[in-house]
Image (cartoon, rainbow, N blue to C red; front, side, top):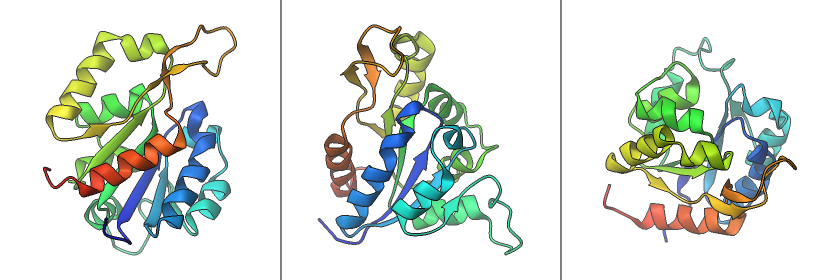
Amino acid sequence: MEDGRKILVGVTGGIAAYKMPGVIRRLREADHEVRTIGTAAAFRFIPEETLAIAAGGHVHTEETWWEHSGRVEHVSLARWADLVLVAPATADAMARAAIGLGDDLLSATVLAGAKKVLWAPAMNPEMWRNPVTRRNVETLKSWGHSFVGPAEGAMASAEEEPGVGRLVEEAEILAAVERALLDDGR
């Protein structure tokens, strides 16, 4: 495995966002250069500063998207990254990508030609089983995007029965990242 690959971690608005600083730190410990995008919804679950500390720097957000630098940030990020990891990947984030929306920084970056995209879904089991979500997953797979999870297990809400929709464990995400970086099929 080539050291020092460039990984862009897109954190979306799911309760599992709290797990992402650990994943980001482990990616950096593996000598990868990591940048992060946090969606507005992600910051309802995790502070921007927490992601910045884990990534060792700046978090790209809706507020920084159109800085006065003259750079087109979503295009720059798509070109920079060897891999875009979207985790947790909500049903909304996958739907936006599957229909080609680009009106937020993360979806615009994926749409701007990201080399490789790895989705780590996390959502309510009913949402994961929904035919629309299944169609969106198949659409993204047909474009060469890869997936890790979701896993079966207890959900965030005590009212919900365990089911498939839980974010996979950190080690599984890290292994999927390494596999995706090794795969030259895209």
